[in-house]
View 1 (spheres, rainbow, N blue to C red):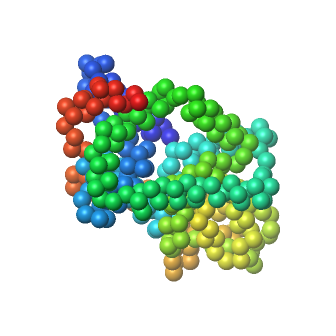
View 2 (tube, rainbow, N blue to C red):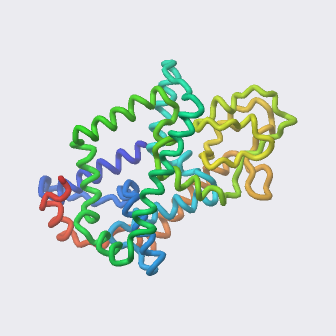
View 3 (tube, one colour):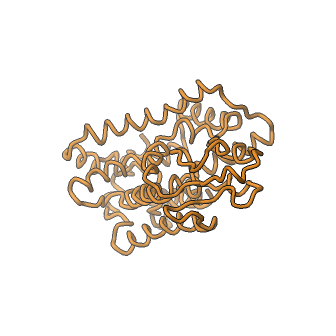
Length: 311
């Protein structure tokens, strides 16, 4: 979360310099592209079709590939250990718990809301994966909109419209009341990672013989999985690999992390592997020229000063 705010500050300084509002040069932080998932998804389809890596937002594509790889290898570990939005949501949840403002939705309503993020994922997948051909992809990636989408995002947070303000306010307030509201019901990114996590060799393994039915794992789980009800492996696509259930379990070896044939992975190894995989993608991308974009600063200055970033 702190690093995300720092990246936002760096990009703000770069944008101010790029539009001539500051005489002090500030380099553009490529990490800001982590917040451009639509552009990354379009670039990924182009990469699959042509083998060409996106040169406009290469860091966004790199981060997207890293997140997908993490979900295949280590379940939704990005959500549990890296995602700043997930961290903020979890923090608001904990505050709500302290204030005793949280309650559990009825099962039917929870099920209906839970499907919403998959509907959003299907909507984006339909538009991009199924409907966009290569010519449309090329046109989008080189469009003024995509070139300045980072600036548009900046202005969204600096000067949100009335509708955006209302939505953000609602999400902020509802997070105090309903546990993990954004991640559980709305985030299409999390829905996509959940699908990829089906292939992951990582799972929480429960030994029923050692369980004392304290249900602390159920209460601690940020995505409300019934861990204590599982007879063997917890392999739900909702599991974010946060290990809260393992850490709170009072019984030795009742809950463990399983990695394929390895029945007991040391707890500290999972977050270490997740973060290391993320950093490995960054290192490789940086060394191979797939991290910094190739747009001349004159082009960026042209589009930014046209006011496109304000729209």
